[in-house]
Length: 172
Image (tube, rainbow, N blue to C red):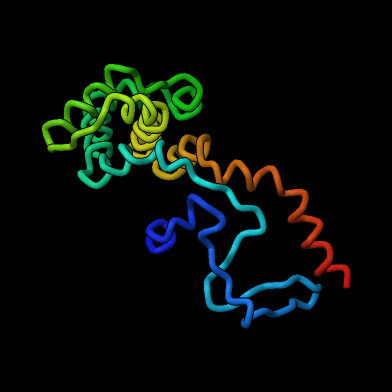
């Protein structure tokens, strides 16, 4: 996956190279290519601007650290809230984001105000998701983090197409 990010394959479909010499046809007539990994039927370009600052925060472990400390300081209140209410009601606040930004500055991360603003919602979502993971493991984490996952959201839209393809293989 890291190589795909470095080659730009996550941001631009034109960056994905397929070896036409290694073309194969599946049992049901689909063309696939060998040698380069799986190329999705539906390409979803990631918005790199949203992730620049967030990636820097993760490289320094700042978002995880903040979520850990916040959870430790508020564990009784958060557990009393329960997972369903947490998912519905809890929001990472601007004050929480400011604390993360302060931690980033102390760690030597230099971010422009526009980068911080562009990343605001995704950082707040990650804070909420990591707090949920501390308390409810993956049962809390995934319902939060997948709300803004472009690839996941696009995949959900195409479930009907996947079912049609699955029916082709089972009705033969």
